[in-house]
Image 1 (cartoon, rainbow, N blue to C red):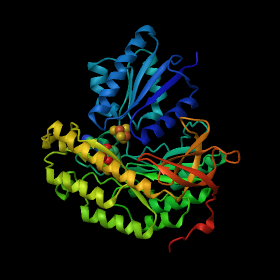
Image 2 (image 1 turned 180 degrees about the vertical axis):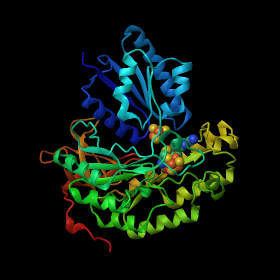
Image 3 (image 1 turned 135 degrees about the vertical axis):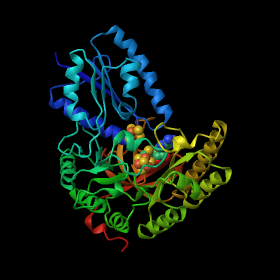
Image 4 (image 1 turned 45 degrees about the vertical axis):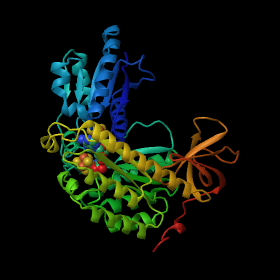
Length: 448
Ligand code: SAH
Ligand code: SF4
Ligand code: F3S
């Protein structure tokens, strides 16, 4: 019997990219992708540990799946991803609910661990590697327009609140050539957008090339493919990188640059290794080099010892930068991290209040920024019909904003078009087709 695999993915884009790598590995060994959870013989959860609520969600899901397993005793249940590293003992020895626990650097051996699980033992592979990048594995991707490509793994930054260095291990990069070849194959399959992924892409290095070199090489593969990247760490964002973005029309003018806090005292306790002055200078410099660049950020409310003054400093930075978007979180203590030892002294209701103020402020900034776009033209990748109606298409701008516009016969999914914006909410833009758009070589050198 051919085994059919069903994978549910949680967490960040890197996990989604990993799921495609896992499917690539398993398909090579003859496994098939299950179309629904009911027809699966193996269910894998690719998990996230970043905050406590992420882990609680998985525990909730596992207890549902336990019922399914009691009706279908041959079903194998496995945990992949970041929780596999953190909670293997709990999952296997104490809760006894899973047959398989395999961490992010052991996917190559997943078929062996599955064999172990089929034979009735527990399949456990949780070693972290200093070299594994899955460089040679072709991820399994459905046809589509957008693809994620992991260009590096792990993280060496050790921000004091964060589990990633523990769940994903040391930083390591794929070779530039293998990334370029992957984009080449995506181009042949008609993909139109690629997002290069890493926890801190700015420290990418394959020995010869830095991240700016990688971006430049990726952008040249096919000018019809738009290139995105995430995440940038404010300490390592180089001038060379900013110029590379400016010079290449098909690299999105959009930088996700997490600030975390607006207070230097808190940034230091977080071990973020930059000051708020450095951060704001960087934003100014980027705006000079890439005139229409936009930014998004991540913010944590209620880090240990955070005072109202620290919190107000965060609000102040948000007002100064005017982010296009933000991911905003309540601080969640993670066992094993340095911040865990600092205690969790900001009461939950205070965290909630601060988070709400941050969310409200961001919403009003997003609304205002979107209003400013009315009357302007945006370059949009046509992605499909809008969720609400087949009379409208939906697409996204360079800056990742959703745009809704009327269907016209001449427009096809996968086209790049110019859309004139005529209405906006804080989350969505509405507009109409103006013209087709081509990312031509001649567009480059636009600001030097
Ligand atoms: N590598 C990326 C982000 C990784 S995690 C970076 O450095 O920006 C995504 C976001 O989750 C982080 O930017 C941070 O804002 C948030 N985060 C991480 N650990 C957290 C914790 N313990 N509690 C609350 N938010 C956290
Ligand atoms: Fe975590 Fe910091 Fe690394 Fe981002 S840079 S993954 S927040 S340790
Ligand atoms: Fe979560 Fe691991 Fe990504 S902890 S955010 S899935 S790196």
